[in-house]
Length: 221
Picture 1: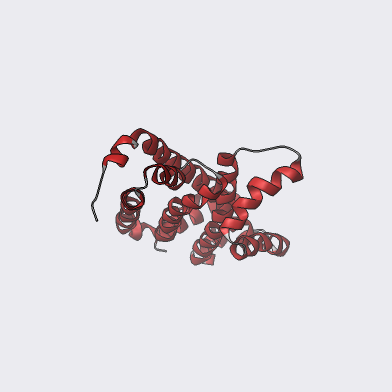
Picture 2 (picture 1 turned 135 degrees about the vertical axis):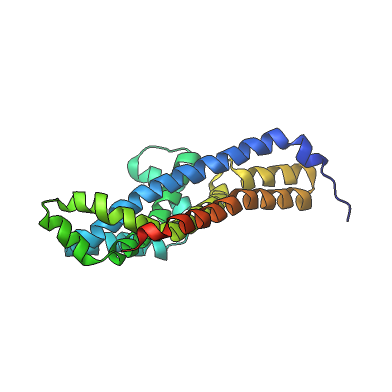
């Protein structure tokens, strides 16, 4: 089999823009997922039984429904519900973020409960509100403990962004499919896409591991 890199070189501006879109939707969906996850995780831990039941249903729903179905529903069905269309990028970020948020919330909840209960009790005894105690005492320790899991979820978010190609988000996989269809060089193009995802994900995974090793002692209690 002959290997021809010409299609990759010729299409590089097109593919580079697609790579930028992959990074954009990965970062935005991760930010959305982390905001949702922190709120849901904290409320399920400290918000009482009612909050735990209601938000637990959200978490279980997101984990039970395939991400592909969530993205398709968000793009094709949700606009019918609200009576207004949304573009593919917005739908992709929303669907990915909602799905990721469920997993982040469970990581947050596990991290918060790993901090000894007497620290919360001591903070409340000193006159802090529950919110102040979580923000200044509990969460900083919990975040350090959660770093490996949160880093893994960010890597998963980058990889899951490829699924957004099914709703025509112009990310890397979608645009690679277009170029491969035009040039009939699937081996070179899909291999290049695979390597691009590796280049995006590997430094993140290694960087989070290194950061955790440096900060691990600060998360002990």
